[in-house]
Image (cartoon, rainbow, N blue to C red):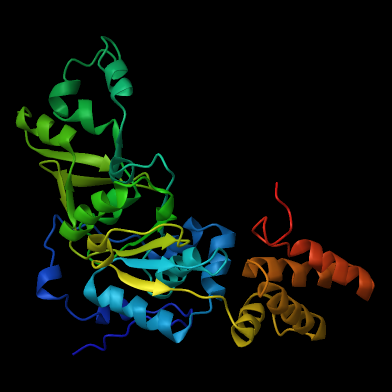
Length: 346
């Protein structure tokens, strides 16, 4: 039997995802037709240098490694809670890079986000313009060649909709800052992620009247590649690795929570901060060690983020300043993230 722990947290890419144990009987999916995964050689080219660096240098705790593997094996979303700057978003990129899951599909949540935003976008106005006489040139057979052309050419799958395509191996989906959503979105997400499928009503309706078939070619998120959708329905084959991040600013319904694997990230301690600094900037010198100590001391009185420490260590290292000026600069680069702790009521 394959070992259940396929993610190691050591940041070295490997094919361990192929050794993932079979899903529980209640989490098996059989979507099709199968969609080939993104090619490995395109993965890093599709990631910004900042996100690639964070993926390579992410320092995972033993608890993080264990719960990531639990989410992968159980085919459940991973709900990651923690203060800003603790690496919640970076985790998705680190796992995707190590397990070669392809470019991360990212859905940034706002108070206006709805489920349909994540599944697909449909532009009825562009379809209306395309239907005007002469919009398709003088070709009288245009509509006959592509029965669903009037619909599928104006659809594009969103990050969630793309992640649920019937890929042969999981895709990675980051649903960032879900606590910013309105009250309905977690429950709406719950149904889709529980079933591993969704419908595109525009294609379902169009398929009823298509004289030559009921398939459509729709663009996937983040690519110019079309995928085949049959009868307007999408069902996954390999459940995606879904990371939902939250700053812990709101409570979620129990029905939502019990269907997620929950990971709570805490502020790094001295040893973890040293490893993070080493991963990003090399072995810490005396100046960096002193800043780590100052950071930990200040963190006891207010909220700080790890990247503030990294900024301070880097800049004070390249700036030609005396010791007193470096300390002043470092303090300016590490203000508290809350106005109350910083003594500023505005």
